[in-house]
Image (tube, rainbow, N blue to C red; front, side, top):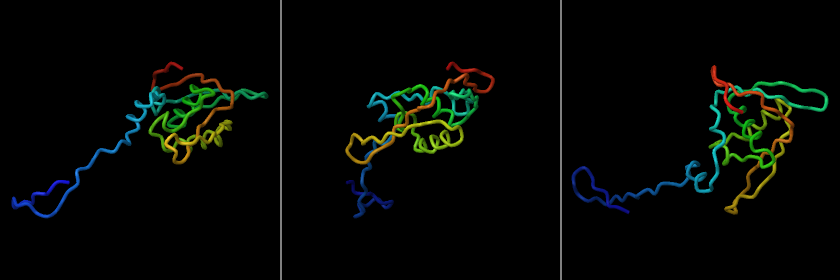
Length: 145
């Protein structure tokens, strides 16, 4: 603790605490755990066009925004799955997964994992549906799938 100097130049009895920076920056945590940020490989406003392959038919959908990024991450992760810490500072990942399940009829498995710190748990999402990403478009540019 430091003694505060007031505007009059005297030492007053008020004490200020020196603040230590919190280690909550997810980019820093991701680097320490050697986790790539695969969500930033496509821009947020990209349009992802994909085929949902079912035994009866092949349905084509287009999706954009965070849901498109989340779908791309699920597709890239294959059987490993994704968590919110691995893909972005995405606290709303479960909301994007909900939208993918209910709006596009995707089968996405949620596996509950214990937090390595011993406190709490988190969800790992694994894409079970068979999909093919046809293209990713950002503005007039087609991005590599």
